[in-house]
Image (tube, helix red, strand yellow):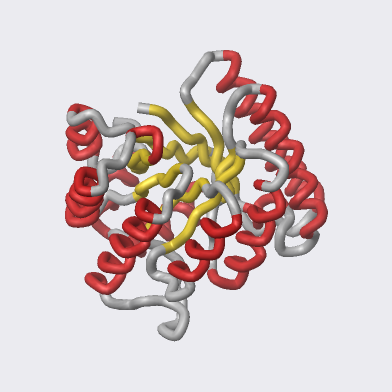
Length: 253
């Protein structure tokens, strides 16, 4: 299994906060390299000044990407709520013209995702992570039904695989989606270099191990940092079943 380090934090309100976030990620990239780990980083742009200074945000991202190039690593631009979806995709478009060391995330529950994926893949090589989506959005922007979101996820994945995406991260713990994804990969004869499953540290570990045992590449997302409360609250709203995992990792036993 490979890993991605996700330093928790979002919505910085000052240059100092944004630069502190950059410093944490620079330290992470250096340590990943020093310890020869098969790992990379995932960043939330609002942590890096997106909401108050887009130019500073891009400047920080460019520095992180340069470090990732030096350390033979990769930077994933995480996706946040719909208020910054287009802005995030536009920044990704700009940066991928300069390097292949950058990717981003699309959320299956957003009604715009199919068109976004089509346009991104038409433009150039694309590195995407596909997830369901966890932010509360209005119905005109997002599918609301559980099965509706599952169906959108599998449609998006098939669209990517048939469209020749450079690489997709299949990010889910949903049994139906994993089985559906495995079936798609088999039917379309997708090479392992073109995809990987992605799961959160400490969640559905048996399912994770089963995928690896069957030969599928898998990446573990490792959330880290002081901003654990907001992160855990969002995850609990998304899926109450993971409450046990959160509590277990909070308490000293």
